[in-house]
Image (cartoon, rainbow, N blue to C red; front, side, top):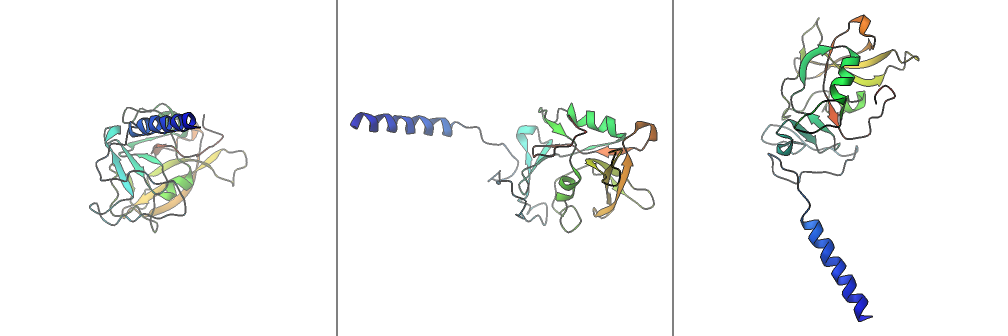
Length: 198
């Protein structure tokens, strides 16, 4: 019996040593860094000085931002280039951002999750966001098919207006022949599965 107790104590000591050696995220903000991803929580973000929701990750060379509300990691400064849908898929799939791979195009719902009352929060840390000025709108591709096209030939696009609000949502053809250009904002993590991505 006494021997079993010593074995159990030894196991607990070993586990404690392993756990204490686990690498913590390096950030430019004070922790805690991670929130259990939960789509029923809200984390305030009112100013750049008071925004616990978003954490710029220094272990991604400050090129990625953790959204503690959803657990998703976003590009800090998405590309301004406008490209067709196929290029956008490949752009994210093979991107190395902050020295890491594993990126993809976000779903429509993930893109909308960035918004707070239909606008990017006032204290968000993102840069290079393409804004729209009517009548010309700059859209971001999403990986979500438009249910109005059963063949899956079009997807939703999201635009941000000059006030960073959600401007019109549009459906755009995936066909490169259509020449519809939109910007790409890559995300990492989550479960945004779409049949058109690999």
